[in-house]
Image (cartoon, rainbow, N blue to C red; front, side, top):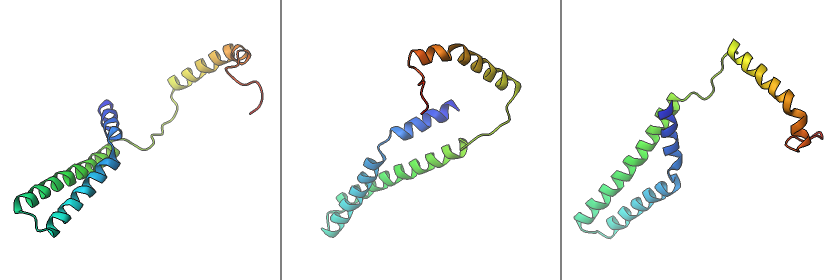
Amino acid sequence: MGSDRLDLADLRARDWLAEDAELGGAEARLADLTAAKAPKARLDEARRDLAGLRARQAQRAADIKALADRIPGALYRTAEAADLEREALVLGLLRERFDDWQAKGYIPSRRI
């Protein structure tokens, strides 16, 4: 699961709008070069650039799908004894500190 979180962080860090704009720009450049009957070498270079950008976008989509398949949307399970013990501990700690926290203003004393 740690690797999944790293993969997700990498995907979130990417500037998807910039990637999409770069792809759109490459498509427009190729169209312009084709319309201007540019030399074959320039057309080939523009096609290679476009193919690379399309491959990068396709890989992004594949990474998203693979990650979505590995990470469940929601996981539900029954409470176990350890869960109930932790809840009781937290409630006990909260009861001990509640009045003090309210007096210090950490928790509102008026109904919200």
